Length: 230
Image 1 (cartoon, rainbow, N blue to C red):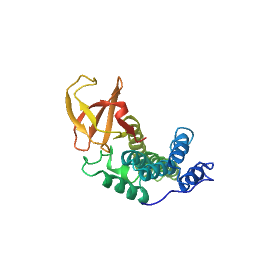
Image 2 (cartoon, rainbow, N blue to C red):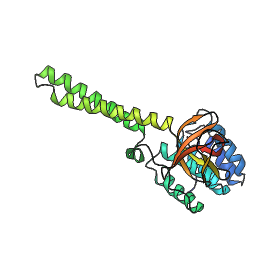
Image 3 (cartoon, rainbow, N blue to C red):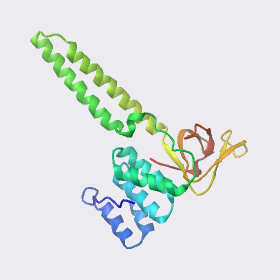
Image 4 (cartoon, rainbow, N blue to C red):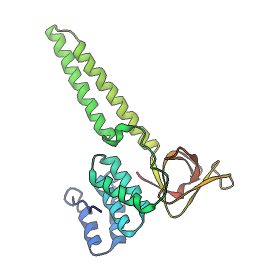
């Protein structure tokens, strides 16, 4: 397993504080430090998520390790260390359904924010070319093309960000989860999901989550059954 990331100066010493606790064998203290940072201003930190995943892995809690590593992968999709450790954590679980898919294939290599920056650059370049072409009397076609592509890319970026926010990944923790026909403890039981099963959350209602797993099986489970990856 690839070890921790160090970026204490960049993140106000939070990473190094947690790493020091981990090196001394205080796993729970390290997890507490990083979890507190995750709930505050560093909630969207791939480094914090990665280190939490590493700590839970060392603690032997594979499902929670997967949840945090999937969150890290969302923020740093091209990082090989994250995917390496994620594969190791999944391998520890044995037979579970395949991971829940991302909303779009491009999210495996780009974040919505990165795609949004590309869209903004294309839109800005298109605007400059368009204005420059008109002033020089050369027509509008190249500028309009770039502008249109930039707007489309920006729209896809916004859609992707909304999908990740509205339909995050959850991981079953602390025992089997019962997948039911409706959002009620009295609803019929469809199947049971093993710890470590990754699901995409469709919506929530009354303390229940409507989810779909990697085999496209859909049903309701209690909110407490899954750790949301982000």
